[in-house]
Length: 118
Image 1: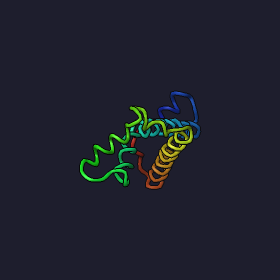
Image 2: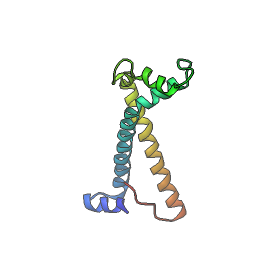
Image 3: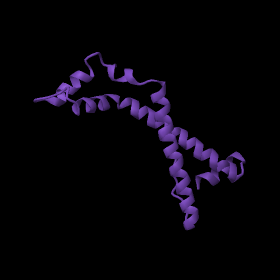
């Protein structure tokens, strides 16, 4: 698998290479998750307006879009602070790490090779 190749290439024991690779992938998933959540902020804001009493009658979607961007194109991003960034990063990186750990544990328990990813 890719962990064995990494261990051989870097001259590391497999016991060191495995957690390093899991950490590397988890950080990547965390960064990807943060970027995608940040990029999707306008959609989240539109959805919030769509489900609120601030829109009514016909053309509620158009009303939601107008409300989302009424203070400028970057308005939906103004609610993103350091706490949001940290929360999103940790949410996705911990989820990625849990997936990898359970995937590896199940593969070992079932005596099969895990699917190569990353």
